[in-house]
Image: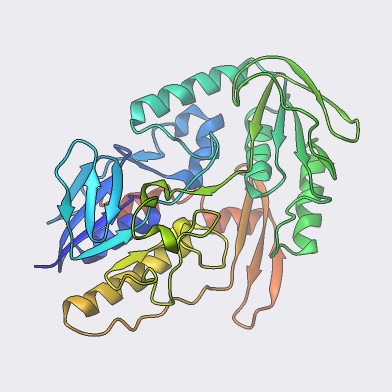
Length: 365
């Protein structure tokens, strides 16, 4: 039976592993001991009821395959080297290691108990703060601002965005910016655009400690706690110095073809944030890519040519501002976009931020 090693247990990785489990000898390698539902991480950052909900065990995911809690040090060809273990020889490799992002949107700790302890400390720090500064006016900064405003209605919140407008990346309509700006104003959130900070606060991200900073244009900001809401980076360091390194782009993503095979490697695939597919990095895109990889590896196992193609889909932007507000940019089958408000945004993402969907995928009650 063909051996498939999936490196990375995020949204794309678990989809591939589960999909190939019935027909292959699947090994899923993940450095975290539990799945982290990052789509709900910002809600968990402000609400301790959510703290346990975003961490889910991998124990029920695979019926036949194996889950390894470990860190991959290097992949050479189809040989996977894991710290403290014997190398694994695979017939097919799927790279699904995602991207890093500053806390609390993502967690770097390999142990969920450590991540939960850091969340506990963050809740204490936020409870003692009167004002907060969010550096970055993209989707993460805006969504986090909404969560903070709902959980701490007396908290003074400032968003600092160096671009001339919020949601400055390509793909966001002016109508969406206007709707989100209106809602931020309703929440009393201060938004500073068109200038970056002259210097960062002297405290670590998420640490309680009063500070004064200013933008390069001289606008003053006072706060008790701050967060970095930008800085995603593909997690591909383990490919440095290997035969995959020539396939890495300067931003750390890896080159893939339309079949999602890594260029020059017929039996190696990549999904999710790690790929150089020109689209926003989203959980639903990673799962769609995973389904293409499942089809293509299944074909190869059967002795056929992999022919499933991944085409980036028309992107929806779902941007909640806490549980009761937010807006979304939806695109219909003809490519026409429209903006919907809080009610439909909540309905699309769900009151539980899709926790129940992920639990079902992981075969959890």
